[in-house]
Length: 349
Image (cartoon, rainbow, N blue to C red; front, side):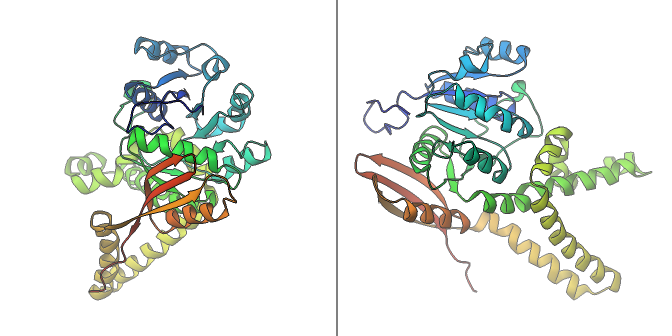
C-alpha cells in the first residue's frame, strides 16, 4: 500500500488506501459497503453482470472486468467461492503491482496459503477469514455492519510480515476487527470445530426432521433450541458443501471427536446412568458458558521495522493459538506496536 499523510489520530496505513473487492456476495458485498461508508476509494467486481449493476446503483464503481477493478489498487479482497480462488488469485496478482496486498475471506486457509507460496505470492498474500456470516446469500443481503467487531483470522507468513501489518492495521481501524493471527493449519483445525462441524450437525438435525413422518408436528413444536441449533442449515447448500470439502480432513477429525461424545451420551442414556449423563452435559455447559465469561489481559509488544521477523511471527501465531487477538497494530518508521489480548486462565474455584 502507498503511504500517504492523513488526519491526526488516524493510522496512516489506512489513509488514502485504494481497495477492491472481487466477488460481491454476502461477505464481499458487506465488506464493499463498509469500506465505502468509511470513505475509502473502493471498487467492486463480480462475475454476474446483474450483481455488478446492483453495486453501481449503490454508487460503487464496478467495472466489467476484474482487471479493471483491481488496477492501481493498494489492497484487494478475494471474496468469491472457495473453488474459484486458485484461478482468481494469479489473475488478480498479474493485474496488480507488487506492492498491492492480496487477501481472501475463505473459510479454509491451508490450501490457498500453499498455492500462494507456490505462485511466489507469499510476500503479499495474507490468507484471511472473517468469523461472521448469515443464513442468506448475495449482494442483496449485504449489510455494512455485518463484519464490524468480528474476529478476523489472518495467517501471516515468514515473508509476508509487511503485508500482514498493513492489512491488520486497516481491519482494526475500519472494521474494529479483533484480528486473530494463526498459522493456516491451526486455523483449519480450529475452524473445523468452531464453524464447519456445526454446519454438519445443523444439517443433520434439520435433515432428520425433514425425513420424519411427524415433520409438520415437529416444526409446530420447534422452539429456541431447534431454531438455534439449525440456524446455519438455512444457508445455501452449495456454499456449505464447498466449505466442508475444502477442509475435509480436519472436519472428519472434528466430527469423530463429536461422535465420541455423542456415543458417551447415548451409552449413559441407554444405561439409565444419570450421573454419567449429567457429567457429560455439564462438560458441554462449561465450554458454552466460557463464550460469555472469558476475560482478557491486555499487553503491548513492539518489534523493529527492519529485522528478522521470526520473533514477531512466533509471537503472533502463539497469540492466536492461545485464544488471543489484536486490537491494535500501529506502524511507525521504527517498527510496529501491537496491542494484544490473551484470555485469563479459568478460575480454579
